[in-house]
Image (cartoon, rainbow, N blue to C red; front, side):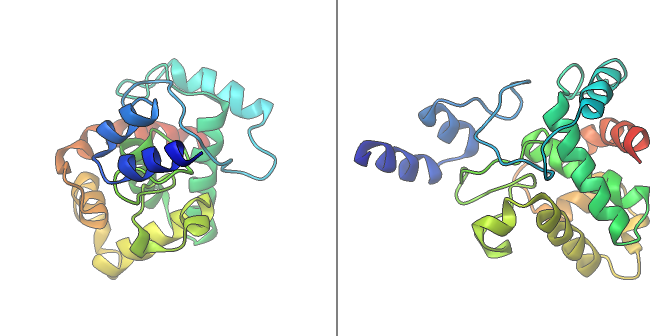
Length: 192
């Protein structure tokens, strides 16, 4: 147990790809690899989520092509429902799903990696408590709160989604967001 604890502490201080190699997981761009994850929806994925995953796998074209499963659909559904509950439109959902694709490929990761990042959006510790950041609805609302804070009066609609999501996330890899927008829009269009 002590060795595992030391390994996790060491891994948490490294960049995501290096940390995942230490703990035996693959980076997010490894397709269907699953991390240790929390469910995104109460009751978990449904049969309808699996049917939607099959449909999406036939139409997605970037990183998510062929990678959707019932779990990832349930996570996308959780994000979209949080956006809808706020009365926001599909453009906001496109931004949130784009971010979740880039950060975790729609996996609600429940172990802190890449410093102290956690959850669907890989939010750092200053965003909230670990249980909050690993709660899909809470994390989505935190993302949307920050987006509205940085881009008041819906000005986030005026800039490209990739720029808006980078502004919210402040990633060391700003170019990744724009390349996932089309897959995000496809997912949102199908689930909205």
